[in-house]
Amino acid sequence: MKHPFMKIFISVIITAILVSCSHEKKLATEFASRANTKNIFVLSPDYLFKTNLKTYLMDSLGIADDERKDSLLLLHSEYLSVLNDSLFIANYIYGYTKTLGKFGFKVFNQNQTGQFLMNDSNSYQVNIAQIELEETLYSFRDEIMIYDKYFYHDHNLNAVYVNSWFEIKNLDEHNSDQQIYFTTDLISDVPDGSFNYDIFSGKVRYMYNIDSLEIKQIYDFAYELGKVYAGYTFDLLLNDELNSKIEPGKRSSRYWRYDPGNHVFFPASDDKFIILD
Image: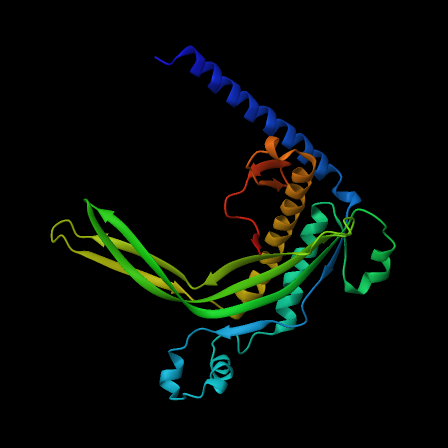
């Protein structure tokens, strides 16, 4: 049986948490409702950094010259050698700016610098400083437990990592530093496999097909990433607002995300920017 004091203590803690979250959600709702008063100037990169990590290709090519290695690996890459930088960046930025607009922000690009400078408050600058694509092999294990026995099959999938660096600054805070944020996502071949267990022989057979990654999917992926990272940007600005308006001791440890379609706030897990020192 719990001590009465312990019950009271737990009750106080729970009440404090609920009050804190209620206050945070109220401020978060106000921030979302005022998004249409905020201006965002988006700067995009001129080109992509591209790296082929399939270094085993050098063994078959028989070339040991380090100065030529990167260029030769890129030349012999399956996707990066044919990827159009301008098209990838255009899709990425279109997804990003279009989704920022859906959150309510007034979005300006480099061709609208004059219009943006006419705004004297509630302004942010987002510089997508660098986008890097890394072509590699991705190890994926398909696994299953059958009658308490573990079975697995390993795949080496063609994959492309997209790494992005963002510089985001509140232009209303003239003394604030321009913080750098990082995020990465992966697109790969898609395996479709199944384990078939023969109850009479006790043997397991694994059957699979591979839906191979195609260059068009990478362009589509760029657009989807832009949409996702627009959400990350909104969430970052939202949580910065909460941090500035709530005393540190009264601010919960939650990093809030926002679903503009359903007008719902929920705690983030790993789905957010990584802050770089």
